[in-house]
Image 1 (tube, one colour):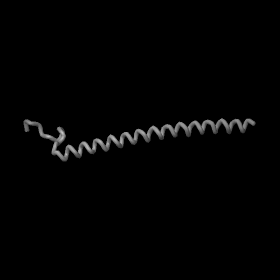
Image 2 (cartoon, rainbow, N blue to C red; image 1 turned 120 degrees about the vertical axis):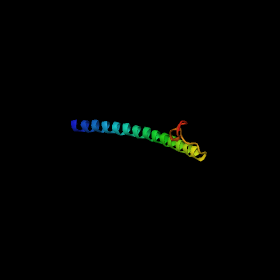
Image 3 (cartoon, rainbow, N blue to C red; image 1 turned 90 degrees about the vertical axis):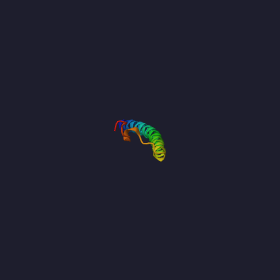
Image 4 (cartoon, rainbow, N blue to C red; image 1 turned 60 degrees about the vertical axis):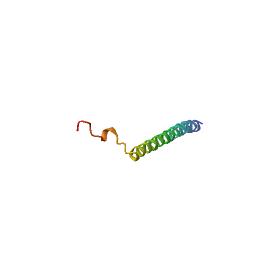
Length: 65
């Protein structure tokens, strides 16, 4: 019976590990979706800025030049 108990205990640990990993994957999927939306938004903003000819401040020469 000890062998069966050991197998059941090991299986319980493995099930817990699979559940934990599933939670991690689900959370990472949400994070990835959010980051993709933000990246798309930033790319759209930059495209609009370039379309209107507005250069970012870092690309403009200072007034004293």
